[in-house]
Image (tube, rainbow, N blue to C red; front, side, top):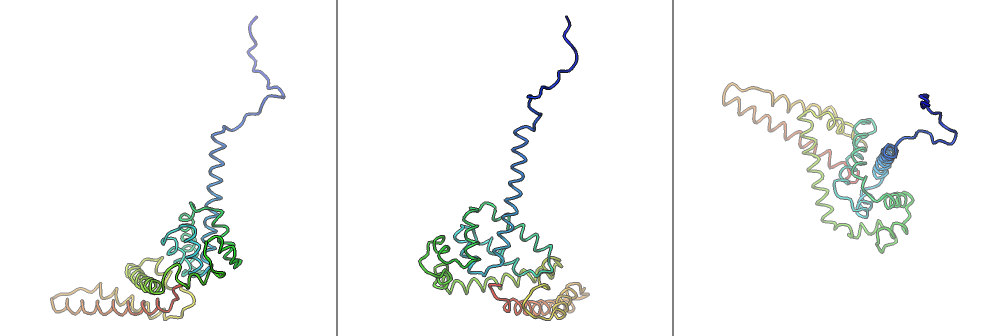
Length: 239
């Protein structure tokens, strides 16, 4: 007798077709990565709400380097109207934080929010009842080092802003004009930037004119640098 060519029916107890274990693992991994990325971005937002000494303490205990501190301080200086810039910066900070110990980071953030000095003391291993005192006493860095660091920050900020304005970098330009908490003459800043651009575009027909243009360019650049330096010095280093 020939075997029936009809397809066999699945019995009630037969297992349903399922996605392969590899696919499930891949999906699980993708979901985990998304959750970890969101958590890291949230940490960045939390850090940006703290003061500079608080941020430094958290980063030190979590064994994170200076680049994270600089990234957080940058996003703190961006105004709320620079939404796209803030979003990109928080995503960048999130990438820097993805490898941190999640339990430690959660505890540090929560303890800082709650001003839980006992918990912070346990996490940092410091002996003071108030961790803020430890920073002030120089356990993190001496006063002279702090002053030098602040001076370096102002110099770097002036250079970065100057170069960004002259090269017409939209993101840096928006960052400057969106600085919060400090009053400054935005119209005067625009004039100074335009003056530099005009002198750079001038053409000399002879050596004498070339010297005049060079002098005008140097003067315009000095005026812009002086304005930017005055602005950065009015922005608190912990801003």
